[in-house]
Length: 213
Image (cartoon, rainbow, N blue to C red; front, side, top):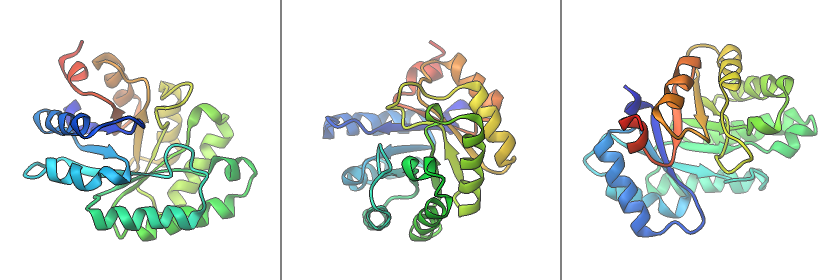
């Protein structure tokens, strides 16, 4: 069922309390997997998702991923205290592009450790990577102990593509979460991403997708 694969996100800078309350109500009606928010909205999201199976996820180092590793860890710890049940971390793409895989892996492992057994999905911004870099990033994420990988913050020039999903699934293996994010606007695209190997879909609204419009 498509609804169980959906993570609804509200991450724009001008998102209001009313926007979030409306999204949480939609999430509960649709029976989606989770709602993804910035750290300052975690407590409110948990409150509005009470008595539902919908999880509260927190975005970490959003949207650039370039902050200091200690700041990322603190952001995770603060979100845990607020009630977060999972995390979506933006990789330090600049350090990755430098070829500093040791730094990136150490940072990812630090965040996974701080998450205290809650799942971590790492966003790699596939549109900024070539094929070899996508494969290398996927292996780093898997080696870090994170539970999944995502294509995009949804704030980039483009989001997920079928080819990206197929490649990430091929490299990561069957048990890894592969999340298609960005540009999933209708049921046809959602179904194509799932058929290509995605197990999670990052979207900003669910009703159009579930109605097939």
